[in-house]
Amino acid sequence: MKFLLVTLILMLHTSISLGITLQSVFDASGPGNGYDKYVVLEQDMIYTGEVGVYEGNVFIEGNGAIVDLNEGLGIWVYAEEGYPANLDLEYVTLINGGYNGLTFNGTSTGNISNCNFIQNGFGIQIMDFTNITAKNCNFIENSQYGVAVRGTTASLEISYSNFWENEEGCGGYNENC
Image 1: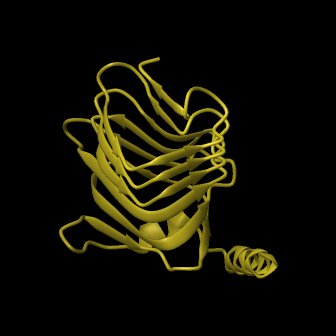
Image 2: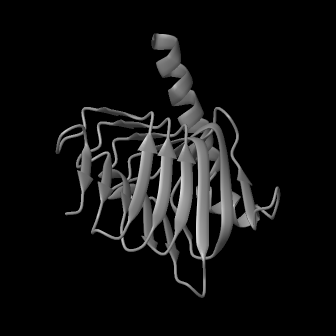
């Protein structure tokens, strides 16, 4: 356990000193594998900051990386009919989001798999006319809910996911409030 803690602290120090932000990696990424933007994060790295997706089909290949949201707004996806936006995200841990780890608004879509949402306000929050799937995710110690579905028009299909010690609600899930 002590070795793991020392390793995590060293990774955090290295990432911060190198100034690796999620936004910089996002901006430097190009198209790939059928996506308009294909973002690849490195294993054992901690990225900082937040990013917004407003159009296009985006994939974030996490490879076990950690994104420290630094109490910011997190990763958010917003789409309108004229400007569709999709985010597919896998193998990422999102921590320390001041409000949400991940937010979907408007008509955005997304597939989230094998991700961890730890100590955010909400792990994932969806609203409006979004259509999201989440599979094999962990929602741990979020200060509100692990997942919040706002309104009756947003669609979330969630499977094989775990909720631990989220502050509000039964199991950390809230729908149609």
